[in-house]
Amino acid sequence: MTEWIYTVLIIALLGLAAGSFLNVCIYRIPVGESIVAPPSHCPVCQTRLKTPDLIPVLSYFFLKGRCRYCQTPISPRYALVEALTAILFIMVLYKFGVEAALVKYLFATALIITVTFIDLDHFIIPNGLVLTGIIAGLAFLPITGEFSVLNAFLGILSASGFLLFLYIVSRGGMGIGDIKLAAVIGVFLGWPMSLFAVILACFIAGLVGIALLLTGLKKRKDPIPFGPFLAFATFATFMWGQDMVRLYQKIVLSY
Ligand SMILES: [Zn+2]
Image (cartoon, rainbow, N blue to C red; front, side, top):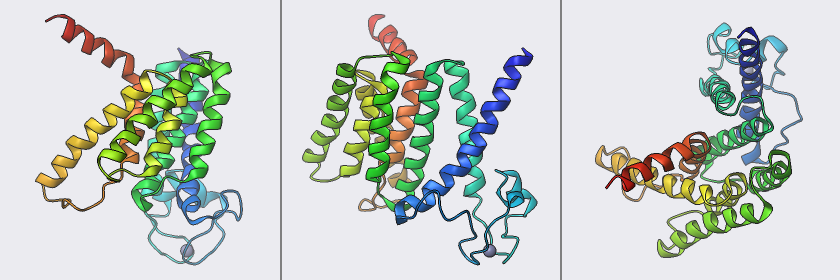
């Protein structure tokens, strides 16, 4: 029991640290800046931040949401991304336990958090993230032994193929970036769960889209990024996909 508490604590701290790094990725990758240099600095006064300014979540509260040097308000989103990463990391630990698959799904979680916020800000899914995802996904295959390379390939084909089909029939209502992101989902989830995730994303996006139109928050021509839906559906699929399929079969077979 005590050991389990330590494990949760370690993963939570890892999540906070990872979240801090993801903020850097989210901020710098879309504008073409390096994610390793220069060290973190205030975007307004350019002062290089010191260790006490960089403690995930806590420094936001210590600094009362302002830069220590120029008093410019700091977006609460930095702390939110750090807290979210830590919470999702603990959920993934709870699901997979201390196994090889844990590393794979922590990586996937970090990747989809980054994709979600970049797509929300810029309506793009950077090629570098897609490539990193595909290479990492392939590298994890022999480590976790969950499925074969052929299965991953079928996963890519079905997930990207389905979105390519939607792209063609909707005449570009979907981004090319989403089709590329589906390839990452394919290699991480394999066949048939990757296709399940993509269909789930379409379903949720449809519901949210209708809600946004009905509430007047968005107009018919306003673009809504699809990446966050793919990201959420992927997380939901590796966390609860098997349960959802079982529930579905139970309901269908009971008729
Ligand atoms: Zn500043």
